Image (cartoon, rainbow, N blue to C red; front, side, top):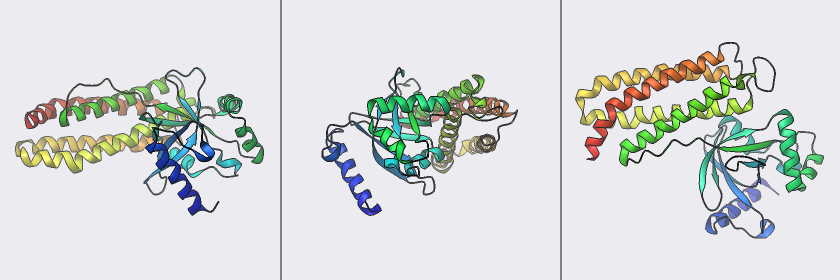
Length: 290
C-alpha cells in the first residue's frame, strides 16, 4: 500500500475507533485495538497509530504489550523509533486513556514476551519468519500517578504536576538502586527500563520548567512586582536543574561509575526546588483564585 493510502487508511481506523468507543469494522472487526500516540523523533509532533495488543501475563494493573512487527518488514515502524526518542506515550483504549512509559523488552525477557504474544496471536510468529530482525515487544507501563490533591485551579494543577514529578524521580531512583544501571548489556550499561523511565522524567521536567518560565512566572510577576526577585532565584534553580538533567541524559549512553550519584543529586535538587516553589507560590495562587 502506498504511504499516502496507508496514512489515509490508518486515519479512517482512528476516526472509527474514537467514534465507536474502540470498536472498528473491516479487517479489524472483532479485534481489540488501542491507539498509541507517540512524539515524532524528528518532528516533535504527535503521531497516532492503531495497534493490536496483548495483555501481559501476571502484570499488576494489566500492562499492555504492543509489537513493532510492521507486517514482517525489515525495518522497525516509525512509531517504534519515536518511542525510543520520547518514551512518554498516550494510550487510548476506547473506554479511557492514560499516559504510559513505553519500554521495549530486552534479552531473554523479550523472548518470553514474544512467545506469549504468539500464543495469543499466532500471526506475529509468521511476521517474525519474514524478517531477520528480532521484532520488538514493547511494554506500555502506566506512569506512577501521584495521589490526587483534591485542589482546583492553578494551585491544584501545580501540585498535581509536582506530585507526578516526585513519583517519577522516585521510580528512577528505585530502578538505579535495584541495579537498573547495570542493564542487560553488562557492567556500566543502562537497561532499557531505566533508560526509558529516566528519559521520560527528564523530558517532562524540562517541558514543565519551560512552561513556567515562559507563561506562569511572567503572568505572576506582572501582578506581584514584589516577587520578581523570587522568580529570578527560581529561574536560577531551573538552570541548575537543567544542567543536571543534561548531564544525566548524556550519561544514559555512557553511564560509568557516577551514574547513580547523578540521579541522587538531581533528585535532591529537585525535591528542594519543588518544596521552595510550593512554599512561596501556593499562597499567591490561592489568593488569585479566591
